Length: 68
Figure 1 (spheres, one colour):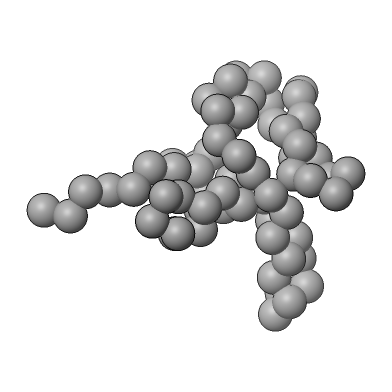
Figure 2 (cartoon, rainbow, N blue to C red):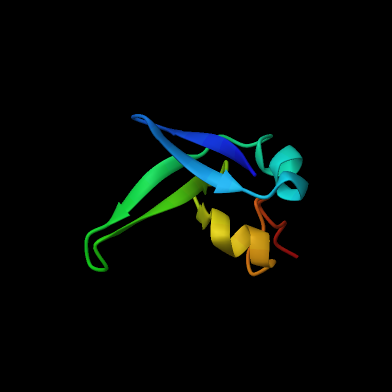
């Protein structure tokens, strides 16, 4: 288990096997006031927010998809 810094002293704990590819991106702690939860998030160059848990589960991509 390794940690990825999210800023303000917060870290996300990730499995060793996910650490290498996740650590290539900049992450921050995003507070969702409606759910009163904090999530690890990354903003793509286009400004789309991707949550770490969705990226790990394969539900979202950390790259901007080209429009066809």
